[in-house]
Length: 285
Image (tube, rainbow, N blue to C red; front, side, top):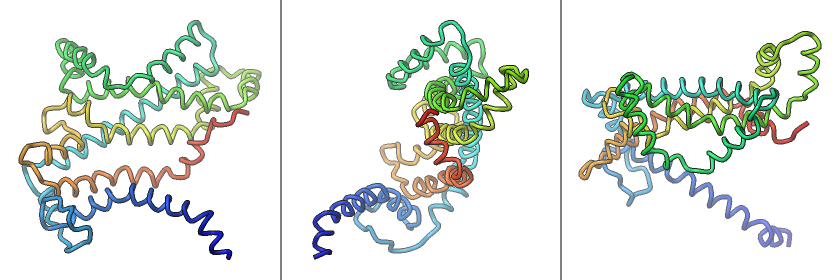
């Protein structure tokens, strides 16, 4: 009787949960299965492992025509720089919008929210035209350069980071600022000695999300970077499957697994901040 009651009331929830897990993990399973096969094709007819081989990894890492290490280093350097700088700028901006008083404060924060309503794809043609003209007088930060790509990444990440960080700053009691002012602290001292230590969980989460988003970004990277020595891992790996007769799914899958290692390491190192950071600012007070 108890089993029947459980089956009628709760079994469908378990079935939905297992179905969602299968739907989410199946692509990852196929990538792992393909990367360790002897062939370079994507064999969807067999869902069970039939053999173990490192051929795809060897062809990816030892092929002199495939600058895999260069792609990885470019992606890590770009993502790390963008995440650190975006957190620094976002934290300063969020503190200013939350604690300081200046003309145009409300209109500016509302404008940032309004900009987030439009997808970034709408600005691709404008960004391309602007950076092409920037390249004419500043070749190091124009179109076709890593510096120009970093500038575009930093500009696109400000709105989301500022709103997320501002929600956390609003949850910090204003009495801490008032007590610091009574002791003679300036706004910069309040920012460095009170806000930053208290905001370390949400700063870690913003840094992690910014790193993952930049590391996995493909559209802007493919638009800006044409030189193979400057390409990121997403653009480089796409070359294995982008051509009409390019069906190198094995090396592509192997490269995808190797490319996930920096993100996994970063997740493991910041996991104690993730839960606190994601829920920070949800309740004010």
